[in-house]
View 1: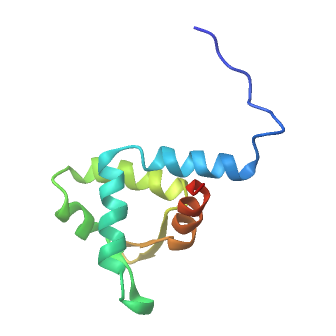
View 2 (view 1 turned 60 degrees about the vertical axis):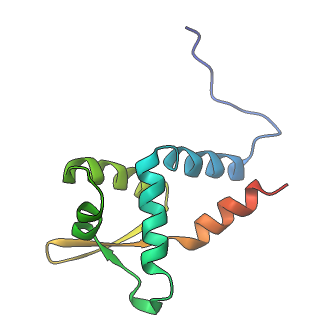
Length: 107
């Protein structure tokens, strides 16, 4: 198997890397569902548009550790913004990044 060198080209820029990172984060059905759930759950709730980690685990038929692993990938991609209070973590969807991603896919 041939290992590719770091991609460097005048045609690939930082925006392309950002698109690839977000696309990779959305590449699993559970992660796509988590983003969709958070977007609908948060829609129209104003400033307090956060969802607790226990609500996400309760909503999906996966173990807490599995959901947490997928949330970690979404956080690393910048799609989930987190805030910790006591023993709970609350998530907000980074709609600006998601809109930027969708806009970049338009022809």
